[in-house]
Length: 434
Image (cartoon, rainbow, N blue to C red):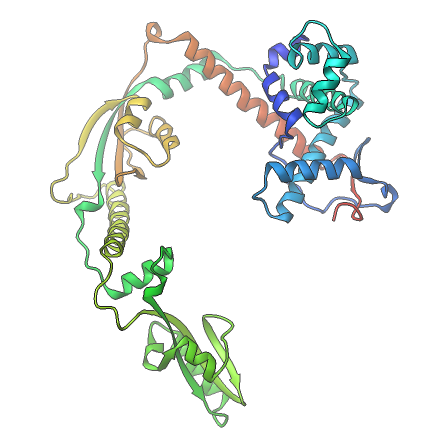
């Protein structure tokens, strides 16, 4: 194997790309580039690299299979981004005389796909047909992907990771730290459920309770003789707060029969020269005597969570401003000494990545409220207890070095691609790329 591949350690990625196209992120692209009918037999031209209509359609079909949940516009942008990114890298390779030999491709195929020391055209042909390629097409695809990886290596090989960087990340990841923590849960708060809360919950969730709601329309008919200025003034008043509830109302189905179907939840309709102001709302059906216990429990929990979030935010602001705070009944601060892994085991953060912030946060400064599976925690980081030199695990340290290096390489590569889009002429054939 060529030295750069052993350094780059990206063989697994190449295997994935060859059988299912991978998208390179970081390129923001719009249809604002130069477009010319001169290249009508091409779908896209990037510098000295061209992509045919066949290549465009093939890429589109593969990405559509890979990202079946994307809408049409997003998918088309994804295809363009992918091909333009490839074009920029291949153009760089051409202009800088970076290449991959056929002999190397055969060696790579033999070792990686055929599990052999010798390339066999017959075995490769059989393998290609198994995954839906012709042998020549798959050979060309593999060669291109190997070249792309080689180009990416050359572009991003400059960065290195210092011991200081790795040790800093190591301490963030494995050092212990004192924390002052307050756990807040919904059970600490009592709430009263009103009809409005149930309506709001059903409207937000639609968890099989829609049949409990009745669609109501509040309305007022303004006669033809009413001045337009006066009508506008009154409508403005009716839109404020809940003033509309002083109007006449009827079920939505009856309103449609009497007038016509509203185009929105609030507005005006012109009926035989008269103007009708309407406001569509929801109310609980009159014949309901009791609500399902499951529904009441869910409404109560949501309202309690709202109260919990509001309380946690106020408490955080008070602590930040150095104010005296009064804690809810039966709650108290906990004092713990944890590393990141121990912290996550004891406090189940909804976003586990938030834990890294706690080990970079300034001492004695409250962290904004963090949601957990049980509720919310208020955290004040305190003293560090760093890992000593003798306690450092060298294997873990090397893993962190690789992590930092990978981040730097991706950043450089994405920066290169984005800047090149402003320098390299890019043409799109709108007859093909619609």
